[in-house]
Every structure is written in structure tokens, then in C-alpha cells.
View (cartoon, rainbow, N blue to C red):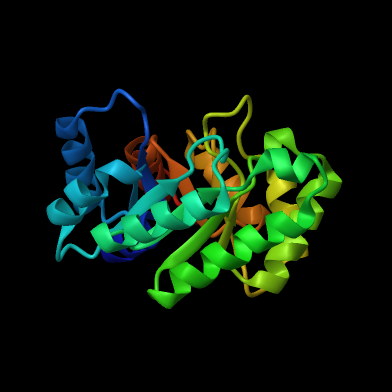
Length: 235
């Protein structure tokens, strides 16, 4: 029984990106979060790109991925700058890239640039055999814009499309996750982030189609999951 429970917990941890993106986070705090990732076997640590080198050395050989947030959290940098930041982060040790789309261009109807940006960054990540995640920041988008962006992802095929940065006025919703997954198709996974503070919310997003979850409440969620499973629940 205990072994089965631990297997389910390990599977859950493997879907969680443990997050430390606050601008005032000290290096010591980042290292503490690295240790938490190793202790709980989380899939990835999500950090600002300037912390990649620190995390790469701290997590070397652990199996925990280092994820770099690029053009974060606003997405308001030109494509060439995003490409430079992406490549630099990869060379410093990033295994995964979470970049924010240019919402100004999207809202201005410049879908060609939005598609070009997604295509170029995805290609660069895949050139280095790294994972690419595209952050929509759905709280600023209409349903039609979410659908259109997800359809572009269906064509371009980044590894994931992601709901939110966690810095906007709202985070992930099950409705947005469902729409994103439905429109993006089987080849593109969905990461839910922003407001994932409980096991209940995580499972709601999972049911809607998300397979990765970004949260700074990871340990709390794991503790809730342990209790939930002990009481006979199923993840």
C-alpha cells in the first residue's frame, strides 16, 4: 500500500514545476528551492534566466530540470532579444524555456509576428533538444485569441502551451486549459500556472487537460496529496 502511494506521489511530483520567480529572491532562497526540488523529485525548478547557472550547478546529476523564464513576465522584448536570451539560458544549463508571447503584437493583430516568434523560439529550443513552453497570459486574452494562439501552436508544435505567468491579474482556469488543449491537439501539452495553490485546483486543471503545473505551493500540494491518497483518494 505504502509503495503504491509513493509511486503515485512520485508521478505527481514529476508533473510539477516548482517555482521561485520573485524578483527579491536571494541566491540562498533559490538554493533552498533547488534542495526542495531534489527532496520531492519535482520535474523542474522555474527561475528567472539570470539564476540558471546557479541552479544548473546545484541540481547537476539530480534529474531535476532547470527551467528559464524568458522575456518574463511581460513578453515585451523583440524577437531577436528573446532568441538571444533563450540561447544564452540554454548554454548556461537550462533544460526548458518558458517564454512569454508579445501581447502588444497579438492585440494589434500582428499574428504573423506572433507565429514567427513561436516558430523561431521553438526551433531554437529543439535545435538544442530542449523543451519549449509558450506562455499565453490568458487573463489578457479573449476566448477567440486563446483559440487562435493554440491553433498556431498546433502547427508550430512547441512542447507545451502555458496559461499564465502568475504575475498577471488572474491565473489558470479550467475553461482556458480545456480550450487550449482542444485547439492545440495531441502533440502539444498544456501547462497550468498561476493560482495553483491546492491539490483540488491542480486536479481540476488535470481533468481539463493539463499535464504540467507551475506553482510555488508545491510542497503544500504534495502534503495534501499524501493525505488524500492515505484516505483512499486517487490522483
